[in-house]
Length: 334
Image (tube, rainbow, N blue to C red; front, side, top):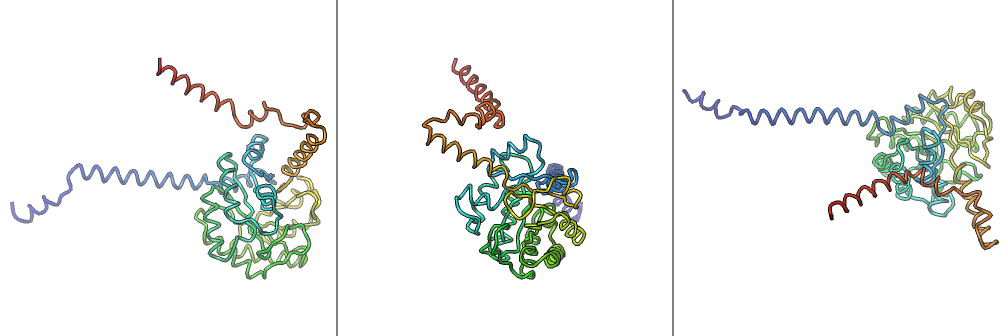
């Protein structure tokens, strides 16, 4: 055997090496399939599927994890975390751009841990410039959100149904959207652009802004404080992407029905604050009753029962597991 044959023998991979290499390749392929499948079943993908399958899609605000469980049990296909609702209920402050990204992420994580429903999140103006917006998008995806909406107000924003709103130039909002789209790590994650321009600049200008936002990469449009149903149709025809109607109480938008909004071409109906408004009104009544009457007896009819609380928490399944663990422990000791 010559030197060439000896060298070839020394460098020929043995069977064990080949087997390990093949195993590694198979696992890599399997992991790639799993990662691909997980993206197809990502929260963003589920949100897009819900919009295709329910028309218009009804999205309800969930101010905390338990409210999210109640909404899921009722049959809703998607949830919403309101920036104004979070400011009021989690922080006890007005909706004036006071809350931070971390404030919102706390509630996002709690809600996405408690329910499998896709969650649309209000991120106000994105909490800063391009780098901040990019960080916001990546953080929301990691926290399990399905979608966000970002608006064209100035950083010191106001509730969309209040007077005195100030907007940034359309070009600045376009930059916000581009930063958000570029930062997306899941192509199915939804970047929705909200425009508050109708109240300040009129319908034509608001539609022109919406067109520019879609051209910049926005997947959907949220036209805030719309006063007439036919306006939604004009937005839809102009931009050609899904349109959201925010049907909030005590604001500028009439309480249009699902049928009216479907006729107007709306794809998503948002009921951002209804549940927590009712919850807060009930809580205030209970506090007043206890303080005034010295007992909660007359307020009992408005309360959720202990049985219903446990039902929506799946409490008895947890308790059964605890009983099983205790039984195993007692058996081991005997």
